[in-house]
Image (cartoon, rainbow, N blue to C red):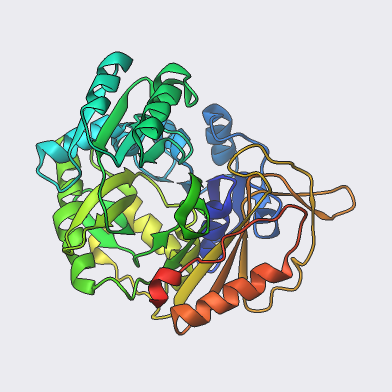
Length: 421
């Protein structure tokens, strides 16, 4: 079966790497892809929002399955466009992808169905939002309602920081129309956890749990990024807590979406906070694989990813077994100097050919005319180490990361340290 994957980052590279291991996989295409993905798939120069061109390409090549990676085209209705042409596609329709596309929709849904989350208020008027903000204690969380490339959330520890974030979102419009409405919610303290789940209507099959590191610098300092590293499993979080999160948050949310006439099919990704008393609450939902969580979750998947995707699209997820490895995985992101602010492109990369046992997923790379590797994004590479324990996997990831060099390279040195305490 030939497959088209839409997207071009580290998440899509990991998905293609996993799909390529399936005996049922034929030729894999990726639109638009990147230089690293081109080692496994034929990259097609079609943008993720060019729905007409994408559907025409899939029809012309008689693609048996399309897999959607990024959030923006899901929110814009890319799945609906493929379904309208009768092309099998893995991912939620536009009305279901709104669980990520609108934070106010998500919060209102959780409130309506009594699913645990932080207390919140929503505003579309700046003066009202500012007055409310000044009446609350800090720390406090300010979120742009729409999609903002993972950067639309500020955890403000001072009143000045909170007011600046509100000003940037609603007045300066740094996230454009994504900031036309804001959610202001209580700050939740505790351990963060990500659970991705394959979902087919009311059937929920959780994947291995993972933990992301959003801030750019060690010790969770500095501005938020799209993710600087992640690891799986979470030995410091009890299995009972993970089970409770699935049973009290993810499964009820899937049922709520069906009840609302928005059945969710694809990957539902819950960003959770585990409070000091061990109770999980919802921070956010994403409507697709996380990045870089995918880079540690899929290497632990023993089952055939293509079989799982087909089961979801055909409504038979409940019928298939899904097995996970006991092995640990740790991903260290190598980013361009300046990220998440302005950064240079076209910087030569060396050391990619000497990775040993580490997996390297390309997020922002290109090829020079002479075949050399160059940077082309803020997050450049995800280096994944695997081992019998988090410590072993972490050592392998950092050994691989050290072998890769480019001017301005930055990475956190404390990925997965929380799991070793």
